[in-house]
Image 1 (cartoon, helix red, strand yellow):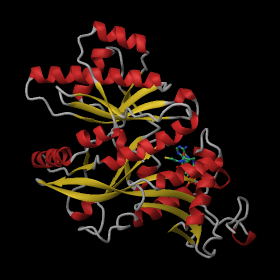
Image 2 (tube, helix red, strand yellow):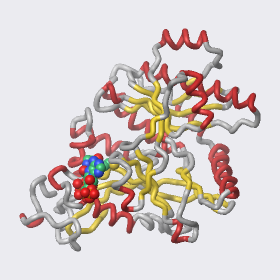
Image 3 (cartoon, helix red, strand yellow):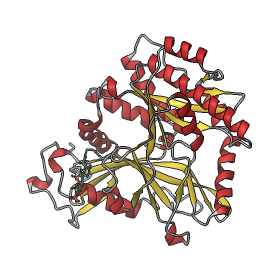
Image 4 (tube, protein in one colour):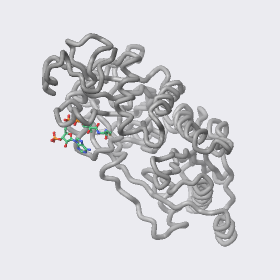
Length: 396
Ligand SMILES: CC(C)(COP(=O)(O)OP(=O)(O)OC[C@H]1O[C@@H](n2cnc3c(N)ncnc32)[C@H](O)[C@@H]1OP(=O)(O)O)[C@@H](O)C(=O)NCCC(=O)NCCS
């Protein structure tokens, strides 16, 4: 039997957060379910407990996470496996990434950290801090045996508790900004399109996103851009590889909810939008929140080529505006309260200004703070690093 909510080791007092008896270990499959059961209090949202566990197991089956997910638990080493009291828990997901340094780009692996949790009755005792400390010691070499470097030089997480907590363990906050736009009804969409001289955007099915946005040419282009940038400055550049597995994972999550909340509706096939003549594309997912007000259509990633002339730039901006407008329509169809996209480029800022001249870029201070822990200095690459393609697709 796994220890119940209130049972402590041997019925004695809980250990101190700095006790030498505490260790961070991968959970057994049953302990993983127990940790999901515990964190359901924070994250099950509109789902009941069983459905939430089913969701987590469903996500675990996705190509992005199938082989690379580890559920970690902080426990007292004196307790026997399967009977250990879970003092704190988190997950790590192995991901593919790109590292460019001194004019060379490498395919590397990294981990994303997520689901950092301590049950309410155990909080404030230093367990989450201890867990992050232990994790920072282990994560660099975890599941890296088959990698060329045998270690990863950086790991990422997205903090919902501000910028300070994770920074003490090396996960420093990076730019975390977004635009939030409103949905648009069919009527407004039709009349706005009639008025504005925007091209027509088309929607993308999953296979379009795979073929257009995730093909090897696009991935190679991203490698090359990072490599070129690393010739210009000595600061290493990294990006999470924007491969199809990421999109599949986000869609598995959206479809899990869509199936349950909209059983009479077909699963959403429109997974993004594009404008072919300008070569502008985006992929999105629908995020069903705890309340309808939290429903958000996230643009996960944009793909386009940098313009070579002002005329081309204008064409791309118009295409982006058309794609954004199509996203606004999609958000309305799926009862999303907002459309969000992260860390817009200057061209995307212009596109937003075409549609909504007063829209303001939001700089998040508390939630979804993109954080990165860099240990490249120990490998002679300096103390700083640049995070490229810091978009929502990489969220975990
Ligand atoms: C965040 C959480 C894991 C902290 O667990 P904990 O075991 O109580 O944390 P510790 O006792 O190790 O550390 C306490 C420190 O964390 C900080 N902290 C805890 N919750 C925080 C929050 N919501 N926002 C900012 N800081 C927070 C405390 O201020 C305290 O800082 P101090 O040491 O400077 O006083 C726990 O509150 C939790 O599970 N929350 C719900 C889920 C969640 O939000 N997880 C984080 C997702 S990014």
